[in-house]
Image (cartoon, rainbow, N blue to C red):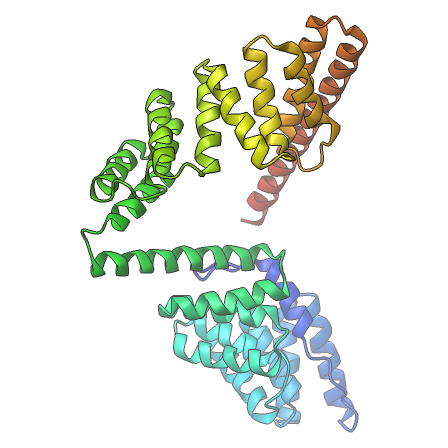
Length: 393
């Protein structure tokens, strides 16, 4: 479901089908019953003109039958006759205030007509009468975001996400709402104190996320100039230099961070990895050994220690570290696991442990083939979905 007025047709068809009123017509005339049944079947099969005619006939035969007005509203909604849809849906709620789904589609129709106040009122009532309705909460969040009520939008979308945690439409709107809320907060922060070091820190983060790394460096340096001993700033700058592959400056900033906060394990880890990349394995081993004393169960640290020991030519110690990684692969990054087996292939051969080297090679080849197969399947699925989207358009 999109914000620009276009809607995902298949998603709305499912939603309309779900809320289509199939009411008891006991006590109604045979003609009414026939028209209601015919209209229901026509709507389900997307014969919209027939459905509209049949439900309109029902409202003439019994103007107080709320479900007929609801279904007529659903048809008019799909025909994009929003004024007619709103009129029919409002009539259904007047006749039967608790009728299920009417205010949801009324709210969506009002939103598409850019009447955000009316849309929010209808959707809020829908969430009150049916709290488990994730669609109502989602659309209430979408409408509130359009109104500029970002905080309220986030609250509604969080509720929708709790009800349907894996719904990608809800998660998309929630992510967008959080992004806009963050932007608003940063703008308020800038207005409160444009010269604050925090403003430069935030700008550095924004530039880094946009891959404008030179600008990110400048903003981070501005923040450090205003707050030279603030924990985290030198680490942030080190991370930016690392992304730029300026490892010398990255190492300098990580060391500056550790002067301010010697217990910063993340900075110490980053410093160790940079030292491995700069072939300063002895420094890396010292740092990683200290970190392992803090986190003895960390396989990520074991992996990096294996890299450093291998670089030092200490094959036995390196093999022990990589063996610890493959011994308990749960939660290990797949690439790290594959590389651990690859390293063991080389190290065991160097140690003349040929059977173990072949076994490690077999595991590496198997994992590589599985990764390649998964990548190909993902690519095929992406191409298939792309083809389906083109056919819909």
